[in-house]
Image (cartoon, rainbow, N blue to C red; front, side, top):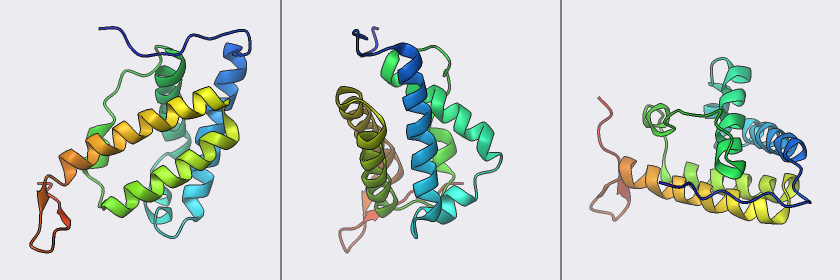
Length: 141
């Protein structure tokens, strides 16, 4: 199975893109840290610097096909007390930051991949609807 990875052109120096990915991740987490909704979740991340390294590796793999990330992003998120509103805010801040830190084509690709991941995570976390029509979470036990 071939991954969907952008081909780097002359304007996509891999070292510059790696630096942009690191800026994206760090700036996004800075914004998340001070956000009223996401802040409590972001500030509860143990070993933040180690976590940021994993996230940088994840986005490097997604955007330019590096082989540094081989994990599974869903299981750690399953344990968190997230709501659909968290995902909406995550996408808003991530999209804003991607446009600030990445070339336009890579920003679009990152936002597309983040949107897919958000949809997949929510489908797994909130597969039911309550009587009020709002998503209901499955027990996490």
